[in-house]
Amino acid sequence: MNMKETIRTMSALLTMMVAMAVFACTFTACSDDENDNNDVTPILHPIAEHITGTWMMTNSYMLQDGEWVEDPLNGYVEDYVIRPDGTYIRCESSTLPDEQTFDYRRVHTWNVISEEDAIVKVGRWNHRIERLTADEIVWHCNHASDNGVSVEGEFKWILKRIEKPRATPYTRILGKWRFHKRYHDQGGEWVEVTEEFPTDYWREYNEEGICITHFLRDGKEETTKFRCYYYAYPSWDMDYVNHVHSNYEQPNSFNAIWYADKNTLHFFHEDCINEEDPTVLLPGGHKDVFVREK
Image 1 (cartoon, rainbow, N blue to C red):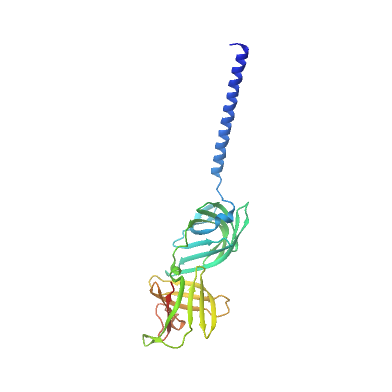
Image 2: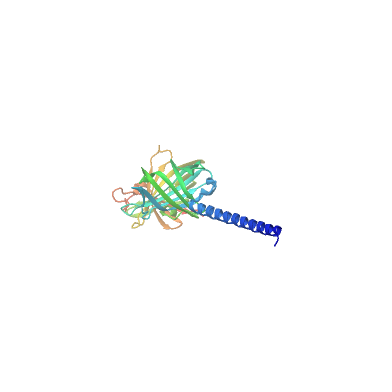
């Protein structure tokens, strides 16, 4: 082999070695990048487009002595319906010590405070998102609610995406109910009241925890909105609804309800309510029967 051929051969070998080195470095760099990406908790962006939907809380944690300690939910239900218009419905249901289930829903606002830092204001408090994927949210907050009381600390919650809010006692009353008949308890017997009633009277309980009542009498319409607090006792036949007037100026209405079937609702007036023993109705009261509008 002459000198020129030797040089050409060495050049070819050198070129091949450089190419292999570049390939190896490229492969290593890609592998390192992939490992780095795997180590980074994913947060989908833009946040506003990926956070909307319905989510259920699956785990709750509190930071104690530098460690995350799980706070068991023990039947507590908290779902979020996060809507694109900047509002969300919080669906909450909890079992109290007397086995009473307290159920309510509220509408609040949300907005992205920082896309870069993944900060979202949910209701009154800022939440830092640790993870946001197509089916999971992990977020942190310095405030939590304990039976309606704000508590400060370091908290973390895990939420999973679901199709719709989970069924709770309040779910049974959802929908529009049209007035059918009124009765008066006379000596232990419910006797129909035949006095003149509004030409149109209905109640509608919506997903936002609002009851809308509508009357049409002598050509005049009257519509009122109430916030609903729903109480259910497994050992009782009846549930209770506290209707709180939306402007807080008019008196509340606390009513017992009983479902004759899924489409027939007996709505007991306050003159039936026994405050000392809610399981027993007072004699001489009134009730309205409503039929679900399909």
